[in-house]
Length: 489
Ligand code: BES
Ligand code: MN
Ligand code: ZN
Image (tube, rainbow, N blue to C red; front, side):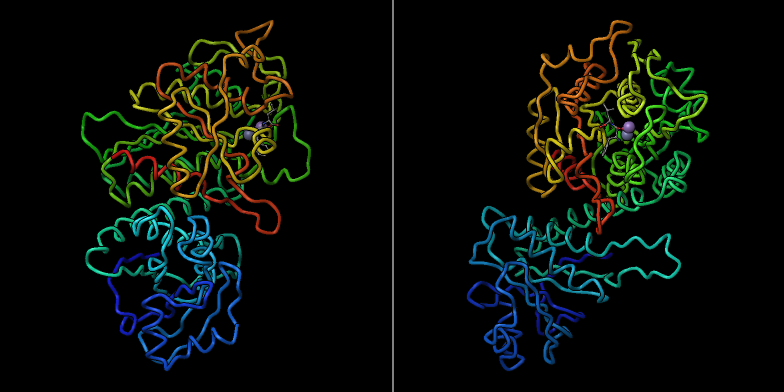
């Protein structure tokens, strides 16, 4: 999708559709009023008839004769200024309504929004359009992608244009990154294997001079002492991989932000086999890794002036004659020993070695992203990502980035009081903490491997994908991560 920010004259700006806000009193914004006038009051007459629903986000497509657009999409708001949440709703529903058209121009920046500027509105508008245009077609024999390929965000004047431009760049990048993550997440486990992810990382490096990719194979990981990671990898016939995508867009001496993604390309549970119901959804157990790919793709596309390393811990969790058994004890790269009481708690086993390895990049911060626990879904449902951090500033910055982008996280406790739940009689720790506070004890486990740097952990088990009729990866938390990274530059 191609995004443009532009000062447009609605009577001249050519497009298949102009997206026009209408308030609770049927009032059009400036551009909408101009188009209405040029069409002899067509829009205001239709609005008077009551054809546009009264609920915020309701839409009505109206063919137009005069002006540059072939159609107008009327979209309802409530009394202005509207809330940020309502603006998102309006941006999403109007974007969804134009996906079958080849292009659209949006005038939503003309809606007054509480505590938001044109830059924010432009970013959210572009993000919504980019997300709406995505469709998974790769494995269908006859599906066509959505038509929407060009999207213009209108700015009122030259003065506003700079801000709108900035917003469109950010929102466009967030959408691109999210859609990369969604595509990888949606791919089935027989296509998206650890080796497939290696191929994607190498292809990205080939295309962009500022990004380089390095890969550790099983042999190398064994020699580095990643006994915890390898205890998961060894149950599968698919070779595992530790991938690093190193993007150097910032100053040479600037310490990088390191992102670490859980990349379990399929999680059967291993010998602690999962029940069959909905097990297909465990193809999404690499959505943390997918979000790292999404962010790296967006950064190179945006030519962002930052240093970021994307680490992906890729493996398949399978039961086999070579798989780990409950009670097995392994030694992690850090030297700490782990009693594996449940082979289905594999995410922390691959991540702990990835976190130790991440230290070699001398990071300013490390943020891991993982579909780590079903318990996080029980605690927070599907709206919030679970956030843990060993530093308050990092936690607050990530929460703020989530609020701004609409990709929200909620902080959970990482208190020492929880740590004894991981005590083992036979090793330094065990890999599960019991039934209670399952998301917290998983984070506590990871914290033991992240003591040397500022670290945050995002448990995206509830936010990374949707089940049911709209089953599919969401691309979260790519918008949050990009907002955080680009806020810092
Ligand atoms: N990938 C799962 C977590 C998961 C489960 C995410 C369901 C989303 C939906 C993870 O590897 C796992 O199986 N975790 C176990 C941990 C338990 C054995 C301590 C879980 O949550 O049940
Ligand atoms: Mn598991
Ligand atoms: Zn898992």
